[in-house]
Amino acid sequence: QVQLVESGGGLVQAGGSLRLSCAASGRTFSSYNMGWFRQAPGKEREFVAAISWSGSRSYYADSVKGRFTISRDNAKNTGYLQMNSLKPEDTAVYYCAAVAALVTPARPDEYDHWGQGTQVTVSS
Image (cartoon, rainbow, N blue to C red; front, side, top):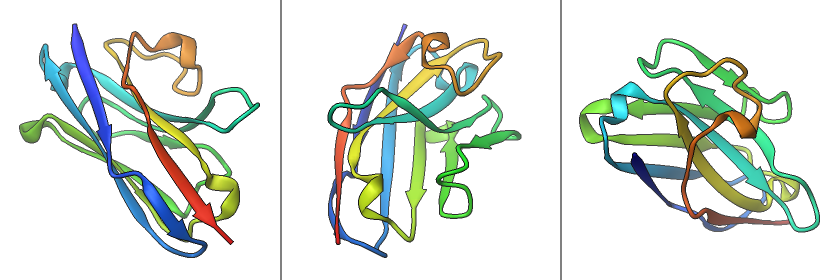
């Protein structure tokens, strides 16, 4: 088992930046692929980005490509999501997730472990 705790959310103006962190504890974080998802009120959870266990491969939703960057520091058992040029439509609760074997990064049902989420609000 791995436990995940997100942090770094908050209120920011459009065009601003935030960096989310996902701190992992329990089993070896470096064994897990990691993803970020978000869910806005009344909408389904949607894929944002994912990164392989080694950090060598990353994947992005089209809506965030070029603005968001996913990364990880296995020595610190922490994953990150750097969000730049934020837009009001990025407003959502952001969740990090982890899974040992990843086939389809954008599918939330592939992930075994989830954090509690952190709220990101972008004002216009």
